[in-house]
Image (cartoon, rainbow, N blue to C red; front, side, top):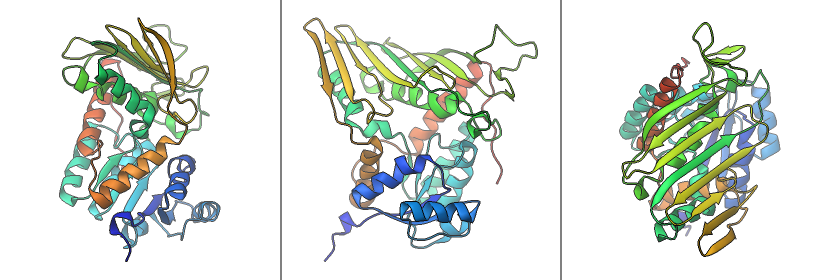
Length: 351
């Protein structure tokens, strides 16, 4: 008799996004979960995707995928502006949802996703995969151990070279921008330190704009040239109830890829050079009065750990640190950061 606790997840994929190979296809292959269906706006793209990644079948539309009784988990890697609408639709169809971040275009929509998840009674998880990797777990363990003393400062930076100008991440109508694509990691990693800082952080200030800016533009609208209202970079300063401070920075036209996290305490500091993609760099460097050491936590993909955690929760009710409440808290902080920096929260996308 098969063990229902180990039964493979039956996953349907919305779209044929490039990130899916890394974020889902590889992990599913490694862990034995099934990719039962894929749908894309262009059926030929879906067919090519299915052929390349051994997806069991292609369906004609996103709606058909949500109606498929064999699909129990929907993975949503669509453009940011399509996260909210299709997350709502998937929850209404009674599916579990694994969505790429952020969960919605703004906090108002994220609140609707939360309500839909509560009504559906299914699992909703935002794909902050970094949280499941031993690199991040080790940072938290070191802080918990007291080796660093009292938390004083956190510094996160998530930055990449500029995508092509045609990339949807530069589209305001598709909820693009540096904070949506990158800064959500910076802000989320800061939020996750609340247990060691007296509670959730509050935003103190934020500033942002584009690389060529010299002060406020004449029209008063911040954003990348050719993409009004879309942030190319944003720096946020936060403070915890216990007095520790944090910077959460992001940049979508940086000279190189950098995704670092530094945690500074009264007795030392811990530094992860790439906490978002630890399969590229799995180091945690610890410096205290006793000396410096480098720990290596393994290059197994954080996405694989994430899929295992989701499956363990669905099949065996194992604890899961991410849900629709957490997604709303992050989205609210994103909106607040945008407003403080002179931007507007991202508009919703109508299907």
